[in-house]
Image 1: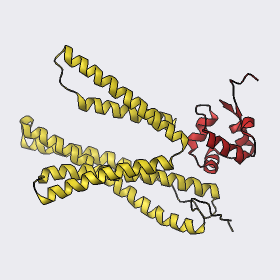
Image 2 (image 1 turned 60 degrees about the vertical axis):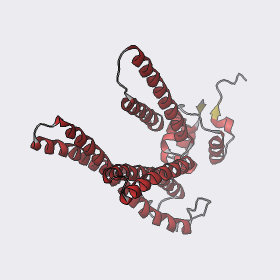
Image 3 (image 1 turned 90 degrees about the vertical axis):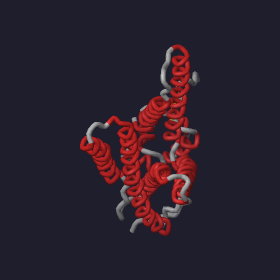
Length: 67
Length: 229
């Protein structure tokens, strides 16, 4: 699943470690999400949405959704 | 002045002081665990070699003594490197100017490290106590006591460590555990049936130790790849 996490993080000038600390996950988890190797669970996706004050669908792009 | 808020994990001022006490306890537990693990590995290696020499494979006394020292030296080198790595990688206490996220990240890393160290310490104590009990003889009070301590510590440590571990890790690490368990189980089942079929066709000795070793390696490597890549 594609996502805008890296862009959103860069806009705030946060490191992966800082974002991981704010989300209470490991730095490797943030890296895995950013590179698309791992899709976060629903609770983590909600935490990400709350942190960036955005709806989940504006951060994550469901490629399988035909529209 | 840094604004400190108290959350449910207890990272506020009161929680911070408790955290700092835990820093020291966690570090001590880490050193005890690592040192015990090194001693356990050395003891097991020397015990195995001594058992082999007792069966008459050693031709010269001086050679036996040198051979007995080899595992100790190798373990000391590996253990020294492991202790150095532990000292360098142990989660650092955030400085006074650190933000709240840094305290949260450090507390999270420390919780995980402490659980790992606790589990390693429990395994190490078991690995020391059980062979020592066998050496002392299970028909003596000391042997029975050591055996009981070793088994109880191992079981309680592993159960406690697993429960605590699954509570402190994040989704990503939980997924790594899932993959690691699946890879380990698949490896074990495949190798077990290969051995069973091979033993029916040819006169092959049982290779349970090798299967255990390969299964552990596959599980460990899978965990590291998924968790740290």
